[in-house]
Structure formats: C-alpha cells, structure tokens
Amino acid sequence: MLSRLAITAGSRNSGSFIWGRSSAALSTAQPLSNNAPVIIQESPERDLVNFPRRQRPIDAPPVRLGFLPEEWFTAFHAKTGATGPYMFMASVGTYMISKEIYVLEHEFYSGIAFAGLLMYMYKRLSPDVGTYVDGLVQAKEDQLRSIRQNEIDRCQASITEEEKAQWMATSYESLIQAKKDNVALQLEAAYRERLAEAYSQVKRRLDFQMERVNVLRRVEQKHMTNWIINSVKTSITSKQEDEALKQCVADLKALAAK
Amino acid sequence: MAARRITASSLDWAEFAKKIPQAQKPAFVALKNKQDNYVRQISALPEALPKIDFSSYKARVSAAMVDDFQKKYESLKIPYPKDTLTSSIESQAVEQKAEYEKFVAQSKTRIQGINEELAKWNAMMPIEEMNMEEALTYVPHLNLVVNPEKPTLWPHDKDYDEWRKMVENMEEEHH
Image (cartoon, rainbow over all chains, first blue to last red):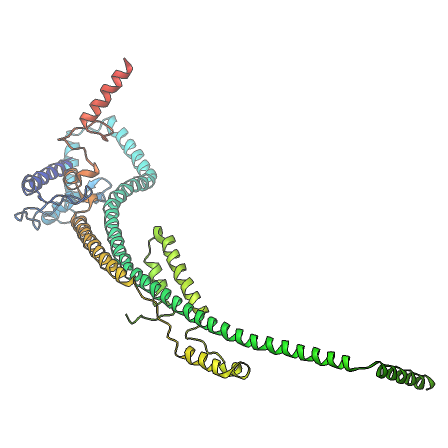
C-alpha cells in the first residue's frame, strides 16, 4: 500500500515536474507531415542524474516468505544483521499473542487454512496466468513499439524511393542519346539505300547493253543460218534430188543384202 | 556537318531499361523496336558503293561505252543525307536537363523533409516508455490518449462538435 502510494505520488510529481516546465519550452517547429512527432526540448535545468526518469517496473519486486517485501528485511540489516528482522517478527508476535493484543480466536485458524488454500492456488495457477498476462503486456508493448519502427521504416523507404526516382530520372540522357542514334541510323540507312540505288541503276544499264548485244548477235546468227539454209535449198536442182534418192535406195538395198 | 556514321546503337539498352518506370515500358519498347528496325535495315544494305565487274562487260559490249560507265561510276559521289533533326534534339536535351534538375532539386528537398521527420522519430523516446501525458504531447495525432482539452465520446474517432451534429441528425431522422 505504502509503495503504491509512493509510486502514484512519484509519477504525479515527476509528471508535473517535467511538463510544468517544458510546456513553456514547446518546440515551435511545425511538424513536417501530420505524422511527425512533436519533439519537446527539455529544460537544461532538468537533473536527469539525480532524478532519472521513472521506469515502469517489469517484474514484481523481490519478496521473502512469499509475501513480505525484501526491503523490509534489508532495512534491518545495518542495525541487527541478517537474523534481525526474523527476531523482530518473532518477538513482536510473541508479545502481541501473549498480551492478547492479537487474539487467536477461530478466525485465526480459518485464516491459516485460507492462506494454505490461497498458496496452493497461487502455486497451481500463477505460471499459466502469468504467461497469459505477460503475453498481453508484450503484445501491447510490441504494438506501441511498432508504431515508431513503422514510421522509421516508412521514412527510410520513401528516401530510397526518392533516390531511385532521381536515378531513374537520369534516363533522359539515354533517351536523348537514343534519339540522336535513331537520327544517325536513319541517315545511314538512307545513304546506304542511295548507294544501293545507284549501283542497281548502273548495273541495270550495263545489263541492258549486254542483253542488247546478246540479242543482236542471236538475231544475226538466226538470220544467217536461215539465209544459208534457204540459199542451199534453192540451189538444189531436181536432177540432183533424183540422184540423191537413187543413191538412197541403193544404200538401202546394200544394207538389206547384209 | 560531318555526320557521325554509326551502324549500331551506342547505348547500353539493358541499363536504360532499368531506369524506365513501369508505366512507360510500352513507349520504351516502341523506341527500341524502331531502332532495331533501322539497324536491321542498315545491316541488309552495303556499306560502300558495290564493285561492278566491268571487265566481263568489256568483253561483250563496246569497250568505249563500258569505260565511260566505269569512269563515271567510280567517280560517283553519293551525297550523305542532311541531318536536320539533331539540333532540335539538342534543344530538347537542354529542356529535359532543366526539367531533370528541377525534379532532382525538388526530390532533394523532399528527402531533406523526410530526414527531418526521421530524425524526430529517432529522437523521440520510445512510445512504450511514455506516460499518458507524454504520449499526448509527443504523438497527439495517434490518439493514444484522449486529449482533455478536446473532450470526445467513445469511440473517440470524431470530436465533440461532429459527434453532436451526428446525434442531432439522428434525432431528426427519428421524429
């Protein structure tokens, strides 16, 4: 009870101590986006060495005998040694019982049974319940932690994104180069087409001349053969023809005799 | 202009492709196809004026004429086509460079802004270690804590005026 009071008082105090001053020193810088946290500059007079920030205790403070806080025992150690607190409890207890300040009526004995039952339940249930509750706390803490981590990741991702966009924007150089190349390539293609055209035109004319000569020669030859054959035919007389026929018949007979 | 004679692209297209955003890929592919077509066209055509075997003609056709042909063919100068577009491309380059520099400057200011925000997030104490008052001061936009200066009703997703308006509308509907 006392310690709980001390904690609430302490946190209230520390809160008013911090914020009472620092609210005047609120940073005037506007947040960049709606997501940016507002950073408070603490007053330089804040003594963090002697009055550090309170940390949320993660585990319960150590106890002795299952329920008595450790610091109650250690408070005795300087004066009485390690056995002092136990001696104190025993002597005060004996005193209270013998003087009947604390009366051992039937409630006391049912209290012992009740304490035993509670202890049994504690031993039996506390591991499972503890794990479950720790899990809840851990989940909440992870959720809170992830807020900040997500924001940091988002910022870093958008920085990388911007840098990539900058890098990608340099493609305009390549684009211009590609356009220039395209023009040069088209010029080259046109030039080569002209070359090919010139070549084919000259070649065609030469081939025409060649063909012309060939045709002339062929026609001349044909004409000459026709002329020779015709003049031979006209020079053959009927007498010559008869002689040729007779000769043929004689030849055939000679062949038949064989 | 002494034309730059090239027969293939001097660009690293793979590197270029990496810099193209997804939305502009079709235009990029069209450009690449165009250039590939030109290269194919060029490789199909002769580089210089092809030789003609005049001696085979000389044997058949009159030598004087073939000689004349040969002389004229060999002294033939094919003019290289005039380049009228490079200058306009150069002016485009200047424009695009200006645009690029503007974009980079903007991007740098954006990065600066993000860095400032990042620094704030890094400087902030972990949220899980804050008490409610600190949470309200550091990260008011997260609505982790109800702001006592702007009271709201559950589920705390609209402020009081909005909530009140909503309730009034509801009443009107019911009557």
